[in-house]
Length: 179
Image (cartoon, rainbow, N blue to C red; front, side, top):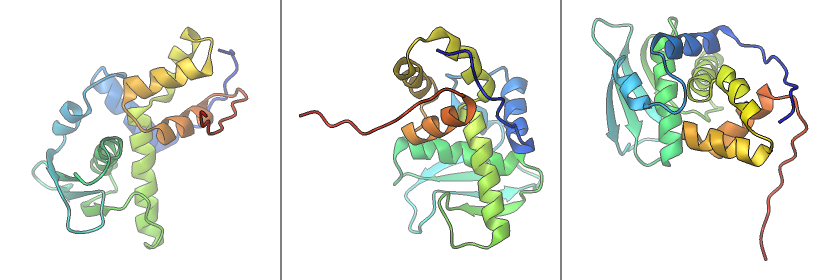
């Protein structure tokens, strides 16, 4: 693939995710549940409410409880698990947080916390430094995107957003329907 890339600005929350990966010596592919279980107790449940995940007890004396909604697709559950870890790691996120990753009806402070946890999750699952490292192994965008999808287990949309934000090469995506 082309040598060009833009140095995507890495914000403080993304740096926190990168430090977590570095501290544990991880790069994709890695076992997300094992990592998250070091910071919180994970439980999977079918939620009677519209929420992706809930983290209870952030900043308390004991490990927080992380609840993940099993009604979500597996890739969304994985992103939500990384998102909830973000709430635990980001020092100004405390208490109990009910995560609606797509929520637009909440107040500004809540939306900001959700945005920060999303940024953390994206960097944790699809690290910028790793993308820049492996891109040299590919001469096709398709092969590169497929490798990122397989190694991270992230959704296609999450991978495309991250790759487009990191690489500075012209990429056009269009739906293809075979006859």
